[in-house]
Image (tube, rainbow, N blue to C red; front, side):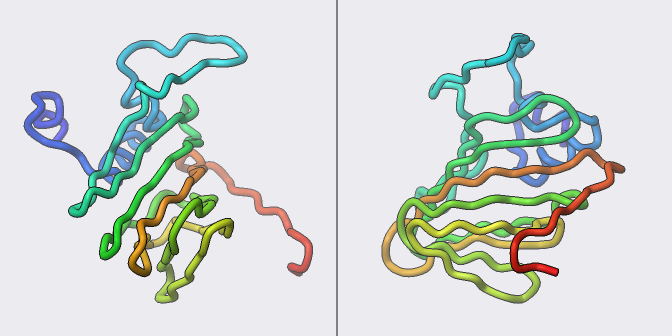
Length: 166
């Protein structure tokens, strides 16, 4: 697969890119970088540098806007799903968490056999170290932002308690 990707004969899935990056001990952003990322407190990422890593059958998309360097992955994504579109994902690495914010439409999140619907302005925290899926629910386009944190393999993930949880 890597040889086919290098030769431009294959387009890897988001999951394949994540597994490849994890195997190499780098982030997806590192893997996709066309040159060395400049050092400094702030690295500007222009709109033209965003990477569309998934295109849905009806025009939906998943766009990686910016991500961290190194083996721990922290990424910011913008998603668009049209009615009837669904994105299914394999489990990410242990401890992977996604934070979601719905900008428009209704987003269905499926994990552990349950479907959760989020509407405009809703947020969610999803543990995605298990198979999961995102779908546009209803007849209007759904757009959402997603922040992904995937700790490096072998990293101990510490959890903290939030109000209302034991």
